[in-house]
Length: 310
Ligand code: BEZ
Ligand code: FE
Image (cartoon, rainbow, N blue to C red; front, side):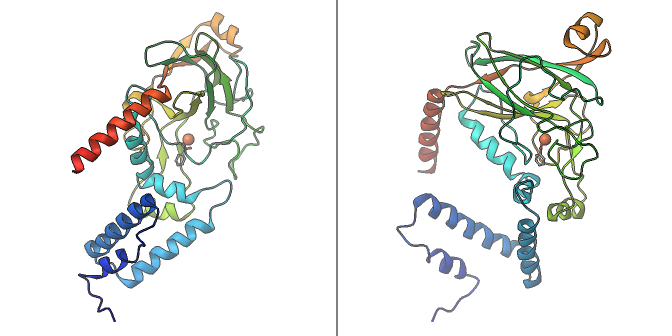
């Protein structure tokens, strides 16, 4: 019989992993066991606390459904999602930086015409005209790129979120646009607003219990893709948000902050169909890396990593 002690229990668990286990699964499980055992030792975890953690995880599952992924939110507030994206960006240097997908992306947004109002003529919020170009790393415009984008309405909810005060049309504040030969995109919307992540589930206990707020700085989400290029999953943040330095889910990067300039121009407002002469204008150019250049970077990166581990 094994005489388990603090000194050998970690090895006892590690030794249960079969040699022919999938190598990546083996790597992940071994690290998980080592780090979680060290964590228990470091904080001297009590049986009650371990049971609390187990029930916490159960509750994360119970509150989740096809419209709410509390497990994703947990990774987000712990900064795990942000870290994974920062690591992923190491092989895409030169491309637009990544940021969180978040739980509110919906597939199937309608393709709209350039210039359309993605708010579907919402009578609330500050009119905004948003435009830019999608280029490759050499500055050449890319044709046929899909920009799949989504944001909250001015009432701080995504259109499909439950419990919101207003009944929006399906896919309001969501759209796909496809670039032409000039790589340009342009559309109308409402200036994004700050909003809080949901705190009525177990993740809210972490935020409340550790004195954290739940706000995200105003942003617009983008998934930008075309065959042969690395998909850009990112967010653009309003430069005037007061939460840029304290995003509840750590998504902000300096290069993803854009000003929304106030424009007072009756002719342009009329051209865009805005009801008053003033509107906000946001501009951003996206840079995509082609798959081949990223494959080279990945190979160079893993070669460097294995040399420094040796
Ligand atoms: C979002 O930006 O949609 C989001 C991201 C992480 C957690 C909650 C919301
Ligand atoms: Fe969001």
